[in-house]
Image (tube, rainbow, N blue to C red):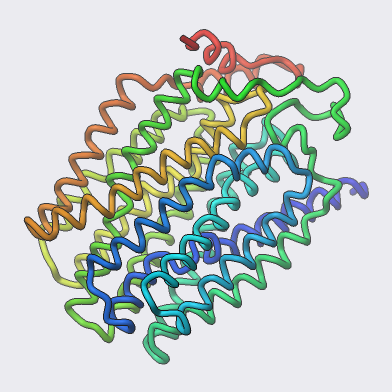
Length: 434
């Protein structure tokens, strides 16, 4: 094996480790924040919902600039390390800063810093493996991400049962250290920064010679399939984001001592399912079509919402959460693949990712607010059904309006030997511009 091949293999293994450890870091405390504030700080549900919505809004505002930063900078590894440190410190300060505004500010900072991870990891992956292996690499990324989440959730559940909900802070710190070491282990020389922004194929050099110039930022508003996809993503998360926190609240109200542990069981159950789903997307999405996978992710949500209303038994709620593993597992792996296909050769891959994740954040922020209002006025079952109805609308929009490029992309790879050729998926995208 040549020296270059050895270094490239090292980069891929370091990406595996980075996705594993960042799984717990990228979302900060995530759903554990609601349980911690409810059971340890004695906050009411309305205040918890406001904090979580404001934090999500802060992340939403930072998302598109974060994508633009990832496109522009060659210090992608250092940016991820700095973000991991910020997220960890902001979360570790919570036990000593329990007032409303300190919590709002710290979690807003944590969410704003955490949004750098998805586009940065996708960019480094694209820069290391290129377009041809990108779908499989993203599937591998998500597999290790879900494995990291599952391990972290099981550790959090066990330590929280023994030491209390505050144990999640120590776990976050340990995972953060692992993520920093893993990111720095990615050899800088293996990252083609032009390719990382979706600008050109292998063999055109990191100095940018012969590479295309990036398209104008206006492409974010003129690429019709990208706008449709962003709307579908927003509807997906408007339906999905509040479901797990609602389940967590129901479990915590039934048994305060087991609330965090049962939430960990829900997360771990879903993550165990997400890993093979991400592997399936990586192996088959180019062949079966990207749109088919995204439709499947949307279709799971109404079913999950209805099943949550059938029983409040703890075992049932945890079992239904397995369905989240199918939908979220597919979504996490297919989203950057679709964006990369639509932004092929434009040099705006990461800012487009940021824009789509901004739409995702809008949906997530509105989801918790919508669910909270419905719970107050009509109860938990009505909230689940309302979220399921939103997902059904998203399915219809995707089915009727979103074009598929996966099959065409696979055929172009089989029939076009020249790496620099523009695939039929890109031709399709250009024809769809208004």
